[in-house]
Length: 392
Image (tube, rainbow, N blue to C red; front, side):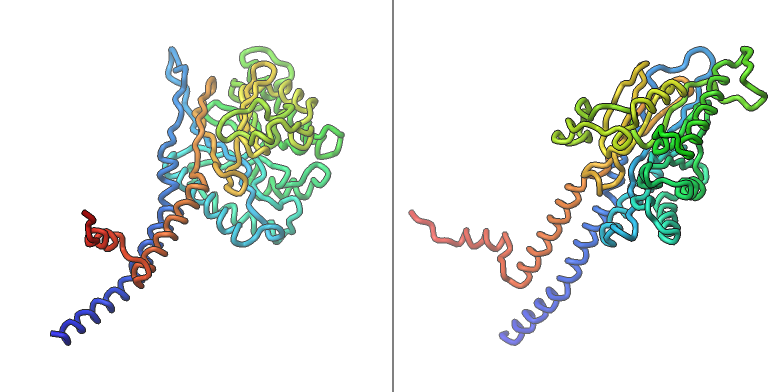
C-alpha cells in the first residue's frame, strides 16, 4: 500500500509539473489575443455611421459618401524612434485601421497631416522605408480611396520646408489638391505653405487655391453666363469641405470640451500664429476664397469644435496614435452634396490594455506560487478555517 501510494503521488506531481507550462502558455496567449486583436473589434463594433438629419425631398435622394477622417499618425523614424515604441505604436494603429476598414466599410479615408514623425529631416533611404511601412499599415482594398494632406512633420515647418520635400511627399503619397466624388468637393490644402511671406512655395500654393476658388465659383454659376469660366469640366455645384493640417486661427482651446479635448492645464495656453494655428490673414483668405461648409484639421492632437465667421464649423480631429493620446479616435462622416453628419469612434484606452496585462501577470504569479505550494489555494485555506476548533 505504501509503495502504491508513493507511485500515485509521484505520478500526480509529474502530471502537475507538465500541466503548469500549458496553463501558463494558455493564459499568456489568451491575454495577447484579447489585448492585441479582439479588443479592437469590441471597441470599433460599437461605432455606427451617423444618419442624415434632413432627408432629401422630392426627387431621388442624393448619394451618401461614407468617409473616415484620421490625423497625426506620426510614424516614428530612425533618428528619435525607439524600436520597441515604434513596434508597439505601429501595431496598434495597423490593427485599429484594418479593423475599422473591415467593420465599417468606408468609401474614402482622409489623413490630415503629420503622417510621419521625421519627414522633415529624413534621408532618401529613411523616407523610402517610412513610406513602405505606411503603405503596409494603411493598406486598403482597391475600391477604398486613401487621401492625405501634408503636415509640418512631413515636410518641415515653413523655415525648414523646401521644394524637394514637398514634391517628395506629393509624389510618393499621390497627393491631390481637389477631389470630387458623389457630387461632393474636397479641397486639400498644404497649410504649411500658407505663411504669407511671398516665398516661392507659398506663392504657388496661393495661386493653386485661387484657381480652385475660380473653378468652385464657376460650378456655383452653372446655367449663367460666366466670362471667366471656360469650356473645362465643371465641378459639382456644392460648397466644398476644406481639409488641412493646421487649424484656422483661434486664440486657444479654452472653449473646447469633451473627453478627448486638451487637458485643462493646456486649454488656456495661447496659440502661436503660423505655428499652432494659421495666421488670421491666411484663415480669412481660405474662408473668402473657398467658402467651405465644413473644415476638418489636425495638428493639436486634441478634439475641438469651433464656429468661424459665416457659421462655418471646424472640427479638430484628435491624434490616431496612442503615443500622443490615451484615447485615440477618428471621425466618421456621412456626407451628401447638400448635407453631412459626423460621429466619433473611440479606440481602446491604453490604460485599459495595461490594466488587463497587469491582471494577466498577477494571475501567472498566483498560479506559480500555488503550483510550488508557496501559497495555499483559496479552497484549501477555506477548508483549513472550517477545521479550526470552535470556541464555545
